[in-house]
Image (cartoon, rainbow, N blue to C red; front, side, top):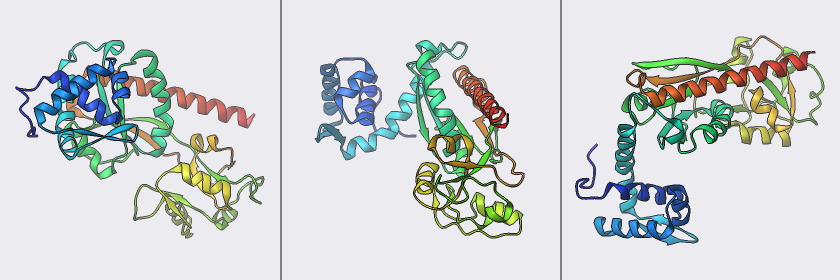
Length: 314
């Protein structure tokens, strides 16, 4: 990438300030994240404005908003900082407690919901300076983003295709049928007929193509046309709460909503969440550590789920 700046004439210590102010839209919050005083942030910003001959940020409400120049600079600034941070991390030694590494991760709705909170809690204890930037990439883009280095790890379904991608299954996610507690079927075991007679909504990240519930119906020679199709589970669960619709959802997500959870009336393989990374990064000590951390978290989640299922069955 060609940087729209002369990196030999700018103090590189100023770039983290530019990044922090851009991300936080606040000089005060930027100073807290950088652990420097607000006057120091203001001074750095003044020097950046002189260098780029642009205000970079203008006041908006209680914070600031970036100018067009700042927006144009940020992709190159982030790439420069990521390369510097990665390059300054010793390849043979990674100290989580002292690291300020920024990791870019992509995860689908279920994977992020399950793993992100536990990962945040663990990082707060063992690596407080490490930052995780989550995104939700389209599956077709994951392999290219991993290869480019713009993405470090991805958590997705187990059948992604791509050259030079390593993978490891993290955990399986059992699904249940979710209904409002007031639904007439809420306290009755489902049969295949009663299940397919329900009015369904669906969750899918795709705008087109069949959703999970539509694929499921086809395997039984049935047809379901979801009344609504949403990109993630949180609004879908709220719709279920307020209506008579049914939703097939991961048990761990559905359990947080206080709704009626019914076992599916047929064998349904639990989809697997899989961790992906690029082969070239397999030896990166920092990424090796993060993969190990995510692996441990996934095992803990599976143990908790197994314990909950055993308790429910007893």
